[in-house]
Every structure is written in structure tokens, then in C-alpha cells.
Image (cartoon, rainbow, N blue to C red):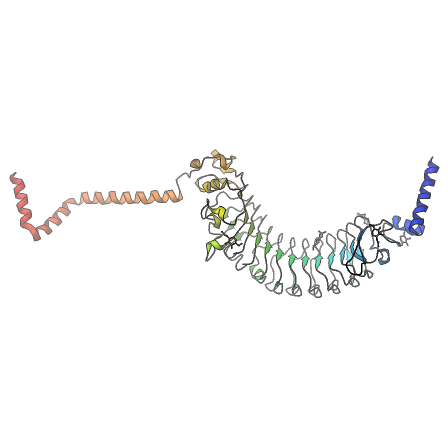
Length: 477
Ligand SMILES: *[C@@H]1O[C@H](CO)[C@@H](O)[C@H](O)[C@H]1NC(C)=O
Ligand SMILES: *[C@@H]1O[C@H](CO)[C@@H](O)[C@H](O)[C@H]1NC(C)=O
Ligand SMILES: *[C@@H]1O[C@H](CO)[C@@H](O)[C@H](O)[C@H]1NC(C)=O
Ligand SMILES: *[C@@H]1O[C@H](CO)[C@@H](O)[C@H](O)[C@H]1NC(C)=O
Ligand SMILES: *[C@@H]1O[C@H](CO)[C@@H](O)[C@H](O)[C@H]1NC(C)=O
């Protein structure tokens, strides 16, 4: 029985060898070595391959996926089908990358998630047609200044999740067509101002989760096409406004997870092109001051979420310097902050809470804040029926309403203790008026005698005789 099985395996194996037309030791070497040896990686089923005919010449393009194969080495060029357009070597165990052999027409190469530690200074020299290169999720500490010298077609470069502390100033000098550069999740503190000066076509840049605390003023000088910038997860204590305002096309800005305490009118000064702004998870943010967003005339989406100490947003934070109506915001989330109070005047479309629906707003989220349910949140109650408005607003204070949904409380019960604000002003002036009247009346009573005398004298000097005659006639009666 056991003998039959073994025989069967041998026969099958021999058959496979005959079919493949390969030598037996090449195949076994490849499997026991956990690396790719001679023979086509597709035929040997070492990688999964997909092909398609290209428009030009009717030739085949091959997309070779060698991910998750426990490779320790880059496959030899002759083991790849020709021409290989995409080569995915991610999720393997290739810790050292030597110079790649020429793989003609290779467009996309991924070496992501390999535990890569070392890379040849000219590793990609013979891959001049690379458009996308992914070196993310590795353990690289240094990046050779010459590494991308020959990649003049490169458009997408992912260097995120490594251990870089330093980016050589000439690293990108040949990559004028780079569209997207991801340097997130490294340990970079500082980049020399000229490093990005070759990247006139760059549209997306991520410097997220590094150790930046400032940015040289001229650093973004040449990035005329940059649209998206991610600066989240760094050590910025202030918005690097001076560097940012050189980015004339900037549409998306993420400043989340930075230790910024206060945002004010200087923070986003003149960043008029921004459409979307993220200010989430800031551990130190306590206050957003007046006119912080005033110059963001094109802002459409604003996310201020998960800021555990943010308790104050000035009611004039959005007031545009010149034209209050020109802000065309569509999406606002103020979820999970520490707000207990928000004036109905804060958000520009709330000039009149009942008519804001006619504006451009499609989403408003105020949930999970410790709202103080008094007369100041009545406007939220009015908004409750609107489809754009996220429901489930819970009250935190006063005690009576703690944990209760705002919508379940009648508006007439949303009262302010001392009738502050509008009503108190009214009462103040009313009582002032009353008191003044009372005071004048008392004064008139006290000084009546003197007034009578005074008028009496005046009358006597002018029309004394008439006065005298009347008094006499009264006495006679
Ligand atoms: C691993 O492969 C190489 C050729 O790439 C071969 O020379 C070597 O003998 C193989 N090692 C083992 C243990 O099979
Ligand atoms: C393309 O792939 C198919 C299987 O999907 C295979 O049969 C065919 O031989 C391949 N063509 C080339 C030129 O490799
Ligand atoms: C990767 O290879 C190294 C030796 O080169 C080995 O120690 C390690 O366990 C391997 N890791 C995986 C995930 O296979
Ligand atoms: C690296 O960045 C590119 C975009 O530039 C992206 O398509 C790719 O998925 C990223 N790699 C990983 C492993 O996330
Ligand atoms: C809505 O947005 C457009 C531009 O996106 C703007 O022209 C228009 O004035 C906005 N409407 C209101 C009511 O804000």
C-alpha cells in the first residue's frame, strides 16, 4: 500500500518533470531553498502570473505576483516571463537587495513588507522604466543618495514604515515626474529645504508620523502642483503657516495628532485653496479662537474630532473677514470633543438655524460631547429634524438631564438658570429704566418745596399780579 503510494508520487513527479521539461534538481533546489531558481516562476507555480495582450504589437504583458512565498532572494531575471510589467515581491523575507538584473519594461515593483535592511546604492539602475516603486514596511535605516538616480519615469514612490532619520538632499534629483511620495511612519525630524525642489509635478505628499516640529519656510517652494499634504502625527506645536502658504494648489491638509494647543487667526492665514482640513486626535488642543477659519474661503469639509481637551470654539471662529456668506462649507464634524457649549452663531450657515438647510451643508455631527443642555443648545434641538444633522445628542449637564437625549427634552425646559445673555440684558435695562424713574420721583418729592419756591419766584417776577389774585380768591371761598 505504502509502496504503491510512493510509486504513484514518483510517477506523478516524473510526469511533471517531463511536462515542464525541466531538470529534477532545479525544481527541488527551488523548493527546498525557499527561493526561486532556474525555470519560469509561472510554470513552476512559484508565483501566480496573469497575462494580457498589450495594444501595441499584440505582445503579452505579464503581471507576476510572488507575494507570500517566503522568498529570501529576488528571482533571477531569466526566471521571469517576458516582458514582466509588474513584479510583486511583497510579504517575503528578502532582507538584502542587491543590484537588480535588467528587467526590460518593468513598470511596477513592490518589495513591501520584507524585513529589508540593506539595499545596493544602484539597486534599480537597470530598471529605467519603473513607474511605481514600493519599499514600504521594511527596516531600512539609511537610503543611498543615488538609489533613484536612474528612475526618470518614476511617478509613485512609497518609502513609508521604515526607519529613515535622514533624507539625502539629492535623493529625488532625477525624479521630476514624481506624482506621489509617501515618507510616512519614519523617524525624520528635519528635511533640508532643497530636498523637494526637483518635484514640480508632485501632487500627493505624506510626511505623517515622523518627528517634524518645524518646516523650513522654503521647503515647499517648488511644489506648485501639490494638492494633498499629510502632516499628521508629528511634533508641530504650531501650524507651519509660512511654509504652507507657498502651496498655491493645496486642497487637502491633515494636521491631526500634533501637540498644537491653540488655533488662531494666524494658523491658516491665506491658505485659501484648501477644500478639506483635518484636525483630529490632538492631545493638547484646548481652544479654537476667533477668525481661525476666516480665510479658508473654499473649505468644504472640516473634521475636528477626538480632541480630548477641546472645550472652546469661539463663536467668531468662522467669521470671514469680509463676507460672512462666502464660506461654502459642506461637511462639519465636531464629534468626540470636550464641548459643552457652542453658540448658534459659530457656524456660518447657522445665521438662522431654521434656514441653514438651503445652504451647501450636507453633514453636521456634534455627537459625543458633554453638552450642557440649557437655553444655549435650543438651536440644536431645532436642527434635530434635518437629515443632515446627526441625531443622538446626549446631555451631560445639568444633573437633571445627564445621560438624556436632547431631543427628548422639551425646548421650553431648556432654560438658563439666571436667564443669562439676551433675556438678562433685557431685564437689566428694564430695571435700570424703572430705578431711574423711581429715583427721579423721590428727588422730586424731596425737593418739591424748593421747586415750588423757585417757580413761584419766577412767576412772581413775571406775572405776579395774576398769581396773587387767584390765591386771594381761593382764600375767600
Ligand atoms: C540553493 O540554491 C542555489 C542556487 O540558487 C544552490 O546552489 C544551492 O545548492 C541551494 N541550496 C540548497 C540547500 O538546496
Ligand atoms: C497567458 O495565460 C494563460 C493562462 O491564463 C496561459 O494559458 C497562456 O499560455 C499565457 N500566455 C503566455 C504568452 O504566457
Ligand atoms: C527570514 O529569514 C531569516 C534568516 O534569513 C530567519 O531567521 C527568519 O525567521 C525568516 N523570517 C520569516 C518570517 O520567515
Ligand atoms: C505605497 O503607496 C502606494 C501609492 O503611492 C500605494 O498604492 C501602496 O498600496 C502603498 N503600499 C502599501 C504597502 O501600503
Ligand atoms: C454653495 O457652494 C457654491 C460653490 O461650491 C457657492 O457658489 C454657493 O454660493 C454656495 N451656496 C451657499 C448658500 O453658500
